[in-house]
Image (tube, helix red, strand yellow):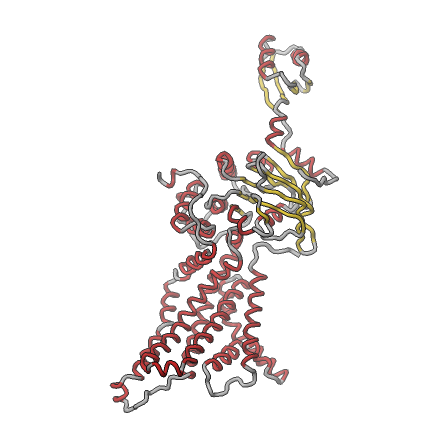
Length: 312
Length: 287
């Protein structure tokens, strides 16, 4: 098993007199992790704590094995952070801004310039790299922030609401970039978002926070895999016996509104269904795998009255 | 391979030393400050008094000139008062320069929330302040500390080793007077910019602090019938410590002791640092 890149042990953070994070226990190992939760759940506070902006009032938090209390500087050298809010200097060109970020992370000036060009081309701002950031559209600003976050080659990339305010085209581009970076496998990505679809499309793991506590942890990859065998079909030319035939294969089967739903047991594959349909001269007009959506999981977690606290 | 064809990859190359990272900020800040040609020209103009004074020092010891004006020992007396007069003039220029430059350093960062970008790097708030403050310190130092040091060296070269040794307090005075002036101006410039965030207002506030301090000091003095108000008048405090360092014999602001002036100046610097500590934060607690 790989070592966790983010590890929280009874992490508590108090701001003013209010306890914002209340005993978080978590070990994240996946390449992409989604951080979900309603407003005020503590997502941003958790990110700020990982970056060393807030000091934990109790417990520990480690990033790549480094303690946020004592090794915040070393942690920041490993992290690329894309904040939710505007974070730029309006009268600076994109290339200067991204280069400044790289140099502050320790890259020598010539290397920083080269990497800034690369990063801006990578996020699709190559042609606009000499334009002032103040003249950028919201989508371009988001991309510039992403370029600044990745320019120094971080080991952990934290994206706070990366698709906030983006039009569908820009959102698709952002999601594609995140998926590409995940595919490279060189960095762990933590995405903090309200948009469940974003998390569903990009993440392997999802952590749902509510009122400063973790209410649900979901390994989306495993869930996808475990629910793969839930099959929904629409047929043509069925005299009503196809469902019975599937049942005889050992599948749990139900028919509602002309749709046959079944859970395939071990040893039964989709091709067995196709074969059965071919033998009976039945057309399979639609067949899809259905699984619990992240939205279902999120809503269930929000409805949960008892907040389970424990190691995940 | 052309840059635009490359895909994303990690970085495993060399890194700069962490202790030198604040210089990055300083380099970018200098570039941004001198983008304005007007400011550059105004800054160059700040060196004119220095060049004139050095010329005067030379002429003051030039035999031909002295013969022409029929004087033996020079037409001006180079002593603490001479240095303090020059420094007083340069201090005004340094103050105005700070009012123009300081807001361009910090205010844009705070307005656009750029602190998050700086602080999410291996870069501390102290380094941020050092990087930005070094720009003000360098620019004001170049028109105060550098000219007074040059004046002392030129006069020493003209008068000889003995004059240098017997008047070394002038070099000492120049260094420490300029150092405290630069420190106060730097912290004042940064703190006011962080406090207001709006460039024009921040610039005006920096200049106003001197006037407001003077006004409050006069008010306190007249209401309380004491001279304790002088402790918040930056001009009085700076003049008091400078006259002491330059060993000017004429009594000036005798109502407050030199030690008191030093303590008041350090307390003001502490207060300005406290403002910076409060205002330069990436996240703030909403109460």
